[in-house]
Amino acid sequence: MEELYKTYFTDVYKYLTAISGDRQIAEELTQDTFFKALQKIGGFRGECSIRVWLCQIAKNAWFDYLRKHKRIVPEDENRESESVRDMALDFEQRETALRIHRILHEMQEPYKEVFSLRVFGELSFREIGTLFGKTESWARTTFLRAKRKIWEVMENEDHM
Picture 1 (tube, rainbow, N blue to C red):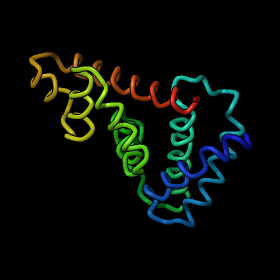
Picture 2: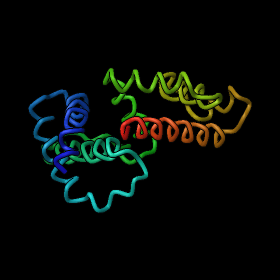
Picture 3: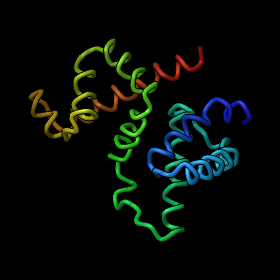
């Protein structure tokens, strides 16, 4: 757990600073995130990178903080689009953004374009499907595959 803390503390802290706008709250929630991660590490299934898993725990800690302090929690906190927002917040971290852009540059079409249209262009799956002359379901599946490919490359790079 100490290795996880050393490796991912900065990423989790920057993420929480970005969504909370408060360094003191981010520091407190970062500690809480790693405490919760320690309790839940046995439930980590490896379906995403450790960094993404920790940021999910951090996001939930932020929502818990908002509830506890009677602040407004976004209505759509459980929607699929949340992962797109999380990814967009991750992009605020310059290092991650550069890595993702480099991976995208090497990615094959249509994955590269669908991912870019969804994340950077903020188009709906319906709009993306229409652009390609395909269905909304095709756009959603293609986006999810592109996202999975990006995380796989990032995870592989992290293990090198």
